[in-house]
Image 1 (cartoon, rainbow, N blue to C red):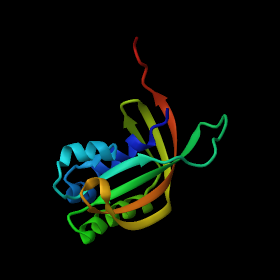
Image 2: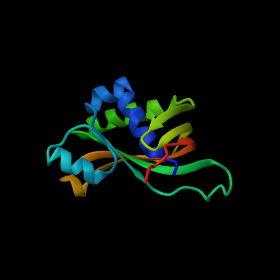
Image 3: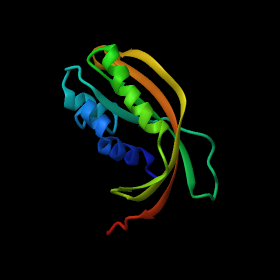
Image 4: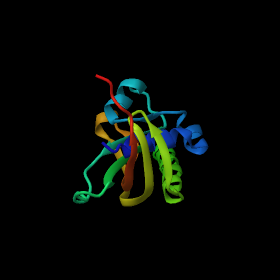
Length: 147
């Protein structure tokens, strides 16, 4: 499986501005984030897959939609996190990312929807900025799994 989501998490954690803003709190999903932050509003990011366009058939290039939620202590802080994420994705150039499952090439990220300023009912009404991005990627090399 091409894991553009894991590749993006790795890149967000490697970006100096994003890492400084969220102190490394970039989560695989909202459930993991809620377990770790334990009810205290703070700046962080979570990513969730949300479908994408039709399959490319035999082509090895994949496009999937990834929803990104940017949290903050206030609506303004959530927007600061979103702005850093947006700037990162807008200036994104193709790159290879080593993930636990193999080498992924990310080609580009284009915003499909958002930003949308909300309060998250599942996280004690924390302010969030939601956006959805279409990510084009391709699994270059997979890690062999021993049985």
